[in-house]
Length: 382
Ligand SMILES: Cc1cc2nc3c(=O)[nH]c(=O)nc-3n(C[C@H](O)[C@H](O)[C@H](O)COP(=O)(O)O)c2cc1C
Image 1 (cartoon, protein in one colour):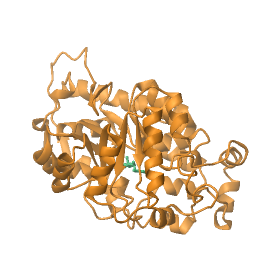
Image 2 (cartoon, protein in one colour):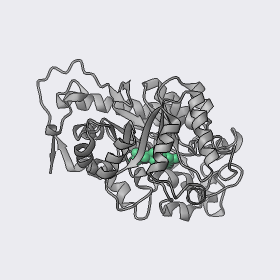
Image 3 (cartoon, rainbow, N blue to C red):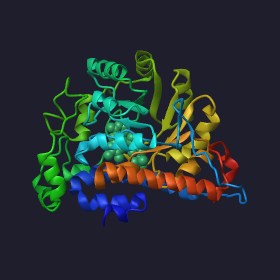
Image 4 (cartoon, rainbow, N blue to C red):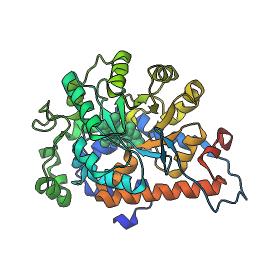
């Protein structure tokens, strides 16, 4: 299988599986416990059907919408994800460049393998920094100050990772940051020489936004779960979120809100947007899918705050269904991560081109010329 054979996100997943050692693939692909929520995130979209209108004169359509106060050419964002250098040697650079090519918002994680400054220098396009609140308050302040100085356009505070989810594939594979060659997985590394040589011979794996304050993850190999459970602040609460919003002072997103009550509180503390998200099913297994939670959250806070539906998106029609349910935009991680792992920047660019094409085709087939026409009456629950 080659990049040219990838025609949907599932194809990129298959190519990534073939090219990555299994501990790395399983870190991307895996989720918490029985992975029920991960599966549900995508399955939820299949339980509603689109109702198209015909003869709508759809030669010219406009796929643009407002995301985090800016015009975006598509109603789609690339969610922040950790340690991308482990997936492909180009890491976040590839994702930033591909996102810039399409004019899309993308996020880098606190656990990014490129620095805030490197990413800012790469693109003047819209970019978000995802903050994990660490016990080391100096580190939190330092990351926020760096984002301000580098001109990041938004800060997303992740609120669903108070402790790590139980990611059993990672427990079995022994995946760490930086990745280590375990005897269990030696065969897999040996049979993926392209990944292994790129990992060994190209620039060193680092977590440059954290290494000023912590050795874990860069100089000391730890599992992601160990990192979260030892480094992050379990006492984080609404006051912490309000303080961080104030300290940041710019466009502020709460990532990982799932209940209508929390969505209301997000409005109260002055957040500009919420990402309805369960972290791609990697945290609380058995929790609801973001798409399923949309209607009640839209009822509670629609029109008062931007609502971004994050998780499970694999198709252009999933984006359209999220918008019909009242989301301002859709966002996803694996939809570009499989492609990054499969083929670096060219892979991500191809995945985005496919999703753009699917969104445009879907709108035309729906008889929709503008995003605002994607309304709840165009959906039916089975
Ligand atoms: C490999 C991987 C790493 C992730 N790392 C982070 C992270 O560092 N910070 C964060 O807030 N979310 C992280 N996420 C969650 C994503 O931002 C996003 O919520 C999730 O991928 C959405 O689900 P989807 O993959 O089905 O699109 C990660 C997800 C994956 C798959």
